[in-house]
Picture (cartoon, rainbow, N blue to C red):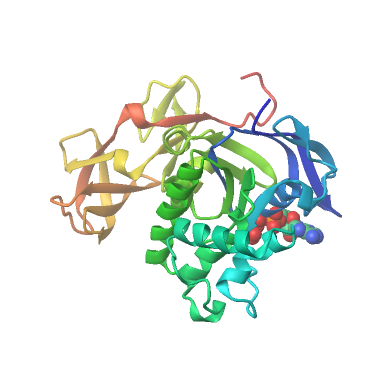
Length: 344
Ligand code: ATP
């Protein structure tokens, strides 16, 4: 089996299970983002793939080879850390050439490769500069060039862009993705930024408390979240209780065609807001925020609070009544937890 194959991988630290029975397949040439809140185990998982952390259980295979007992330098992996870990006393060129030098590549070949790599990360002609003479984004590119110097078969990055300001960060996301596509290198990036993951990844692996909640393409993670946690973590959503009324499940007071009570996830853009009285469900506007392309409205419907994105033309005021409905086809339903173990 080619690509990366992780089976039943766990890592415990004393009482904490940082990674808990993770199974994951990463296709060759694909770009995967490990995404989740602080402490969910992303970094520990990445470090085990790199060989910097020893699994408590499970195995990691790459292109059919078992990596589990293999030391870091024999895994053929390029890594970029949040800190970048560039050598401040070395020039840009010597930083990039470092992994080549320790592998015994001769000066002329190293120089040629450094120029090639600098072109690749769109920083031609800076080999002689000191690291301290570069901007944050330029240093980022040098770290990427160094990690790719020996043409590794797997590229791992841990929060590589988190030190950059928002604009530069967005530009680097696109650049990193384009570079990865050009090289076709299997890449795994740790991030806690869901927009970043949506921009770059072929597949997003959403983690919580050491476990994978969902591994799927960005659009599926957004449109078909596997759990309420994923629905809430990826973008914004309304988690609304589906309640039984006379034995019939209702969403916001209306029969919803579901068979069981539980929780519904409705994205703000799937809440349709219209003038009061034009749809059966009435809501009160409690907050209005103009965000340019649309208007964000916070609404109350009975005891429920809803966030809606309305077209920029519609501009109700706080205290107004509006009619709301939900785009039925865009609702994701999650069954209720069965508290007493009753059959589903
Ligand atoms: P962040 O986004 O904050 O970096 P993360 O998702 O990368 O978080 P990890 O760094 O993998 O999470 O940590 C997962 C859990 O394991 C946390 O509870 C953390 O405190 C714990 N942990 C990680 N490394 C160690 C260690 N060396 N010793 C003890 N506990 C650890």
